[in-house]
Length: 221
Image (cartoon, rainbow, N blue to C red; front, side, top):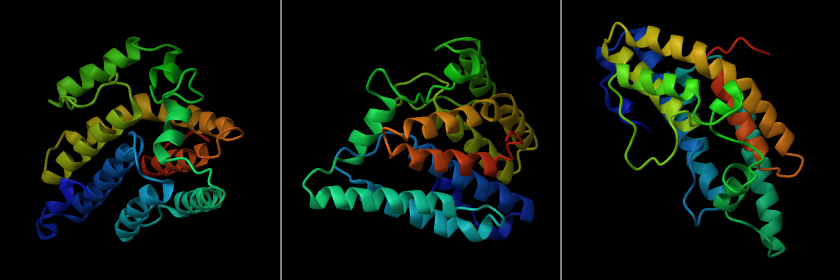
């Protein structure tokens, strides 16, 4: 769980509680789109994620998390069958096939979906948003500012700030989501589904994208 969970619930309004729950979910999703530990199987990776989602569910009524749980269960069963046959890969290997090994079937750099290129205007606009909000990317994060995980963590920080009483943070979060995340969410979902014909693990990330889109009220089909 994120540091946001350390806030004392009694000092928050109901709106603040909702903002904090949304922040926790976005922190969780941001982490899910980063490379996993190199020795973990999908089952090692899935269990803490499922536990976190179960803990968050009561504070996020109406948000259907069953799609993620079902995708994780299916992938764990596939891994277990491969393990019995002596042919199971770590989750990092599966992640790398999708997102890291050129030519990547799916990119996590949103500029490719927004303008068909890396490091374009949209990436610079995102960086400007981070700087305006006083958010500096983690020095350990070696990727462009348009990486999906970086955007989700930025939104989580804004919702956390809103829960703490920042009057501008929620509006900034909603504007950022509308300008950027709603524009790449659908294309990323479709890219994951397309990749799943060769790489079944992609369906886990497709389910995570759908959960993210629902949480951020993405109006696109």
